[in-house]
Length: 311
Image 1 (cartoon, rainbow, N blue to C red):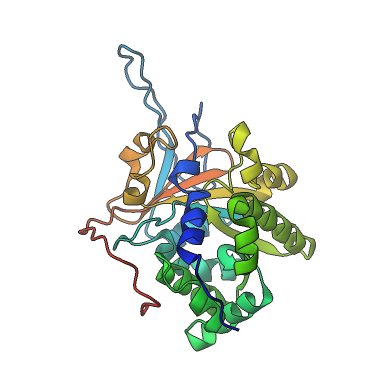
Image 2 (image 1 turned 180 degrees about the vertical axis):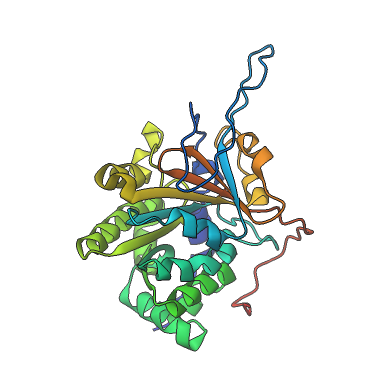
């Protein structure tokens, strides 16, 4: 059955808003923690000026690729890796975080992570069935093709689903089931995503599965601000699993630059943006920030093409 997407632009505008720049938060960390098997940078404070300003120094390690970084982070004790991104929430030729993430999925599969709880995917059997077949068909089925038709990150989502399927990873959706639920729950999307991601993860853990969660960077927080606790499953899962749960945020500098400084202060990370590979910053026990290199290309705004060809 073909779904009429009369509300699609609004849906994904809200989807990006639910954990987009406006929903992230500034974190003040008092002391850095060590990374597993990583060489730590020296920690020091900058000279005090007037008014007093302390430069935050973090443990940071450079890796040749995102895959290499996750090889280091996926220790035997980790059962849930909750990945948060800043969405590509505008129409431009900037690469999306997913366009990098997809290349690391084979590493997850090799380490026994065979289930991906994936925010953009609708929470229904038809969507999950088409996602499972995408690794063979290298294409969307009719439901997903219609659902994502004009999405700003059409190719990032598509290639991530294909890469997961090709790596033997099942994809579980937590977004609106269909247009009927979209209309009824439109203003409740952020809470809905959090609730479904938590529930899906618990069901998979009960089956002794290792789980990848991929959502926006507010849902995975292990230390959310009080008024955002209902938008995060991270605090609860960290409490339940201890070191078995890790929060990993992946930031593309140009996307992060669009985030207001009172939400997430990229000044804390500006000295750690890599020229090659990726830098993994460890600002807090159980939390990692992976910084991607700058795009360094001309950013061109454009109207999303319907069902573009993805490579």
